[in-house]
Image 1 (cartoon, rainbow, N blue to C red):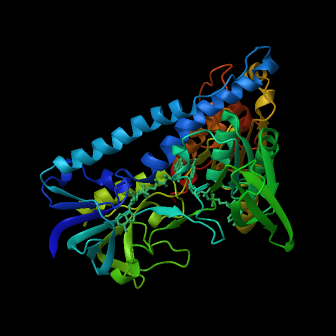
Image 2 (cartoon, rainbow, N blue to C red):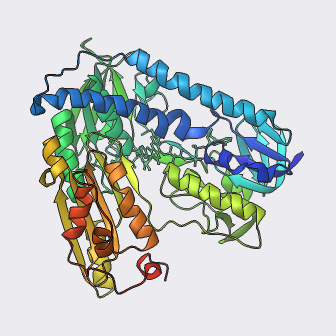
Image 3 (cartoon, rainbow, N blue to C red):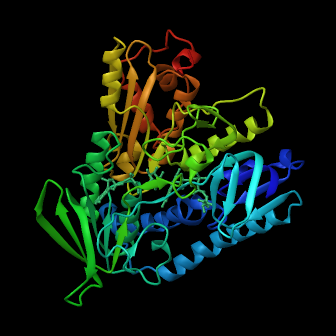
Length: 485
Ligand SMILES: Cc1cc2nc3c(=O)[nH]c(=O)nc-3n(C[C@H](O)[C@H](O)[C@H](O)COP(=O)(O)OP(=O)(O)OC[C@H]3O[C@@H](n4cnc5c(N)ncnc54)[C@H](O)[C@@H]3O)c2cc1C
Ligand SMILES: NC(=O)c1ccc[n+]([C@@H]2O[C@H](COP(=O)([O-])OP(=O)(O)OC[C@H]3O[C@@H](n4cnc5c(N)ncnc54)[C@H](O)[C@@H]3O)[C@@H](O)[C@H]2O)c1
């Protein structure tokens, strides 16, 4: 049995814990996959490195509306792929080598499982234990158990970005973040894409007005099929495509659909790795949804109480499955490991997210429906303003027909409750609204307490705020508005 001061399982956000403050500790960092984890190797970073050129390609196709005679002559998929992974693989490799070079750090490049409280066994049979264990083992794609799911033409986000050629026909299964982003990438780069979703709502956790606007835009760019569940994939009979994917209507299984494809991308959600880690054998509580149970201080729970010396962060324990959340939780663990007498909690109040499609989508806080329910429950009223990009000066410059910014606030106080955008640079435009919510700036003060550069796109946000029925300045202080008391 090898004993350490600290074992970190997972080199994604888990790896960021190890600063110089840890130099005095004997640390093991364990990862059985690619060093650097999901975001770097198969997640946020490579997808955005594809999404950006895909957006450029989309703009070229749409530039004619503005009198620019551009066209998409083609894309160099292999060149793009090699540029992207040439950069990423080097970062992953460099990170691994750096960790290996540290005298106090042992890198274990193997899968591990819990065998008891704070004890682990590697795939090759070594036993490891530590005073403190950080579980940062992430999540993995869920694959429906249907015939043909293991055919080589069936991919997940883990493999699809390394294809040798840009496929001609792609069937994307799933209507969430991953499905939407890859439908954008493949269709903008020139593939014929059909995106199939089980429910009748795409991006189902988003504000319905945004999701509907997105569905309208998406169906201009690729084919959307709603209300179908995947039943199988088989080699195609006609030789026109490599495989055909079959679907049925979950409410009427007699209704079926067959789609030819060169690539079937399955993006039907991700599952926390608590099962492969055998978290229960470590005495840790696993929730019904498969997440490792943690408290606000990121302490893993055992029998509902903090387990001695076990912490967790990121996709394995967080319902958000977002890199900025995993990083924030890692900062909490980094502090708490060294300051047991002064534990911090992770602030999960205003978690924003964005979908990097064209147009982009960004969201923070309550949807309109959630805000209206909240208002009923708290005996208060909400005010909502939807500002179209096309009705602002920069929106005219862009001849924009799709963008909108919806802001939701409490009427009496101007407290911002939610913001939802679809449109150019939505992921950037939302940030001042996240800031206002986090620091308790009310909508009225935010609108009129600062200059907004004219005629920048940010006037969309300014005008949305000005359209709310709120006091010019809030009667409440910032802490109360930020929901801190
Ligand atoms: C295609 C895609 C696009 C994404 N885009 C975005 C985005 O734009 N913005 C955003 O905020 N989020 C995005 N995400 C989500 C984001 O990548 C994750 O939320 C984040 O990477 C989770 O980090 P983590 O540290 O919890 O886990 P990970 O980074 O997954 O790290 C876990 C590590 O643990 C290792 N591991 C697992 N089990 C074991 C075991 N038993 N033994 C040893 N090692 C093990 C794995 O090999 C892995 O390296 C995206 C995800 C995907 C899949
Ligand atoms: N930009 C970002 O922040 C970003 C990008 C990608 C991924 N992520 C993270 O990764 C997570 C996983 O993404 P995801 O898109 O795989 O999951 P998701 O949960 O967002 O979406 C899964 C979709 O698949 C559909 N589905 C499920 N089973 C199906 C079936 N059998 N047939 C057809 N459709 C089916 C669901 O209805 C849903 O629309 C996200 O929740 C997100 O947190 C974030």
